[in-house]
Image (cartoon, one colour):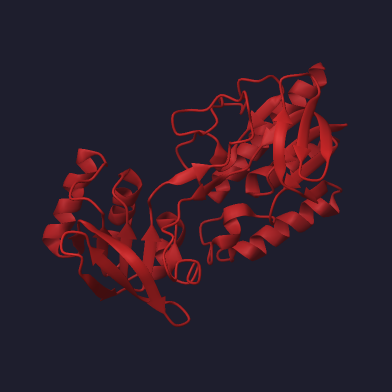
Length: 304
């Protein structure tokens, strides 16, 4: 019986474990792949306070080494079901079953992939799913963004102040994003710094040690053209990993609803990081969520 079972070994889960262990609580982290979550895929991190520059894998390893040195138990198993409504929480994996007094859900969210040739090969080598994370790496370069919602429009506006030129590629002729963002994009388009490529989709990514060009299919005439770019930012949405948490209240986009103290609708169950309904998804905010959740969990445990 653990004081807390943390599902997910990203920055939010590891921070929560760190704080709980310092409070003298027994903690188990269950992770299905590797420590760090999406942080591992970030090639160059320059916005984490106190560290001018570090790659995601190194930062993940530092966090993981810290919590394991403190005695946090970690197992690498896949959670397949949970029973969360009782006083004793049960988490079932593909190998074992674990019991805890509380559960912290920090499973994160996965970026939707294009599913095209070269995408996986060039991830972190020019293919990015976070403009605010990696945009500064491409100052005065030529970049492309894929998508038509608010995220892609905001990414374009952000990158237009950094890059030499930005291509925005969208499969339709109208954007799903807010009108105010579209109007701002048109201002950049008039300046020549932004070029819209509509009714089109990226079908392949090419390069050597990094991205050099992308192939684009025009859906109106079925012709394929190629443009040279230094980076491709994919912004076609994210998918929170919430499928196994029956009874936990989700919003319309399937993110977990939490209050300011990271409580879910189920007593003794907390959530934070990218899996929760939040306005900003960064490493630093994920760590913040983990710290906040730890104090809520500690308070809850003291009342049992």
